[in-house]
Image 1 (cartoon, rainbow, N blue to C red):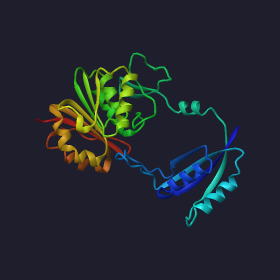
Image 2: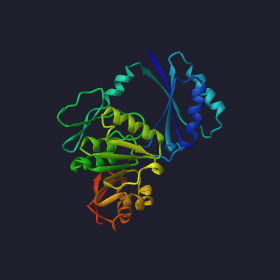
Image 3: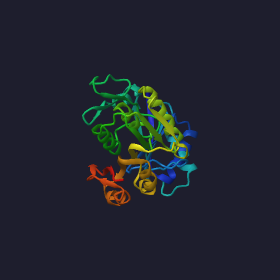
Image 4: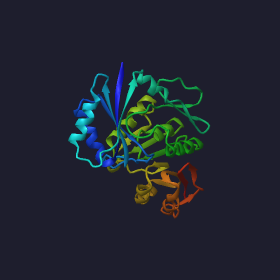
Length: 293
């Protein structure tokens, strides 16, 4: 069976209009894609950011009169100039298999692997974390996550208390637990992130070590190690709070920081931490150090 794709090149403000109307016109599915390699960062709860240059793709069955769909779009939306529209024939495939084939086991450092649950670990003797793409942010593929995973792999976490602030999918927390941490406190203001972290902890059999909390409900505790892979703005705003959560001589690792932001972020932590030189991966950096008091 073949399918028809209708592709609209539009801007962020109009993308939602096309999305809604394509669904009303019978699209089996509608997908929004970045058309200009513009990064979108983890948004505040209740917000849905859209790329400024967006590709909206409506999927229709082969028997659909696509010319009527285009005419309906043009007559329903008063947009001038009207964006470019093109159509493609899409041959049917085993889309689940295609999607699964895109994900392979990934190694971070010397010990740590992230392995999709449908694949056998390539090195069973290594520290293998089972993690599938899905709910919430963080599967190890982004540079900021990779920077933190490689750093965790280098640390002696045996019997340590770790805080993962802004835990997303829980990938850093679960890595810490698998690498020997005694207790891992996971903090996020997104309920979906906390749910994803709990599910991933169950999959990796570390629920006895991993605890999840919203920021306002987290316990009064100091950690031996704190990781925060969020954004430069929140890292600066939260610097007093994050600093207070690290015990004397404890370790901190911060990411989600563009290279051009590194000096400014570091300035918020340098009076309390002996910071190492930043580590960079493409446009992103990690800042890490040891608390001085």
